[in-house]
Image 1 (cartoon, rainbow, N blue to C red):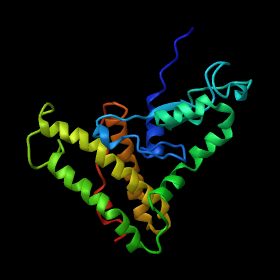
Image 2 (cartoon, rainbow, N blue to C red):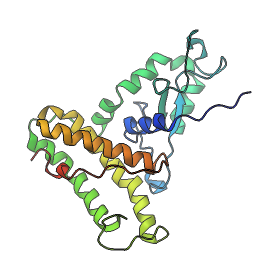
Image 3 (cartoon, rainbow, N blue to C red):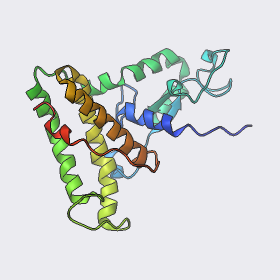
Length: 230
């Protein structure tokens, strides 16, 4: 049997970014960075909607023409329990249903988290300010670059706490903030649209480095985010 190719890092990054760190099965939506693991590890599994070959779950739906099973469009991010559920009972979870989960994921997640389209800019800002403030406090205390309270040592307790807080607090807060902004994009000015675009790229870079393990320079947190919806 030929060895499968690894799923491209760009695809994995996009899956994590678009899941906002939560299982994409709407009946679940559990965090993929559970508190009991202290943010050090995630439990996410990349599930194939249609399988490699002719014997896997939903194999009857595999098209006869050219088909890339490892493409973004054929993958979904799930917790281990939900991955097992859909593959153990494929007739109950056909391709159309799973792709619908993926399309509607951010809407479903926003509803679960109480995110909505607010009536005005002030309400939208009030909804996101606590997440921004918490991240800023962690950055000031633990960040290895420009943090004011220590000289960074990658083996130090502070460095380990920074890595843990990044996965357990900062990234989940960023995903949550991104969902609020996406839902309330109609309240943004033209300049704020640009700031939001920079913020999304900032999140992608952090996800790339801290979740997918790809070294590189993420763009810095856009300072104008602190003023958004003011």
